[in-house]
Each structure stands twice: as structure tokens, then as C-alpha cells.
Length: 82
Image 1 (cartoon, rainbow, N blue to C red):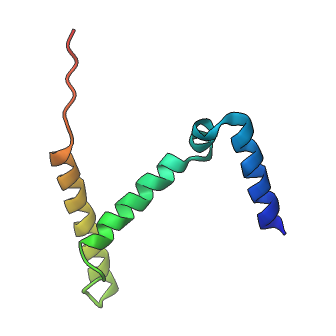
Image 2: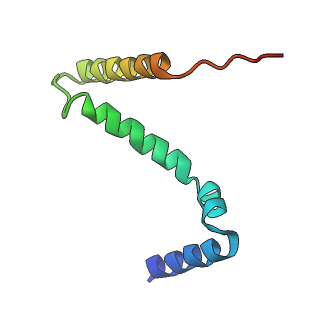
Image 3: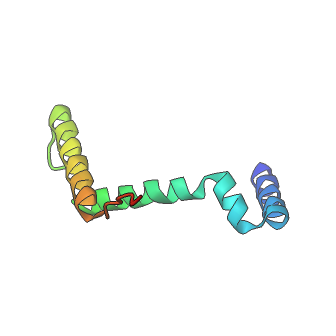
């Protein structure tokens, strides 16, 4: 029952630290960001169209480059005003 013990430890830590602090400590935000990236990568196509491994790699790189470009276009620029 190692899973039950781990869950009990998580619940105890959540009670002691509070949910927000525990989430930061456990890295939940990083996991959410990775899951969101994977979801958007999969949204561009259900599967890889190429059969050749080299072409599959190139296709994934192109998808990632497009996602990065779209994110760069959609993110707000921050300028420091002194």
C-alpha cells in the first residue's frame, strides 16, 4: 500500500502548509504548463502524418516552432518605465 501512504503524506502536508504552498512545493504549476503545451501540440493534429522517423522528427519540430511563434505573437510585451 505505498500509494495509500504517499496519499496520506500529501494530505498531511496539505493540511500543515496549506494548499497553495504545497502546490508550489510539489511543482504543480510546471506540470500544468507541460500538460497545456502537450494539449496544444496534439490539437494541431491527432497523429504524425509521416512514416519515416526522420520526417516525423522534422514534423514535430515544425509543430513546436509554430507553437512557439504563435505564443510569441500572442504574449504581451513588458517595458520598464523608469
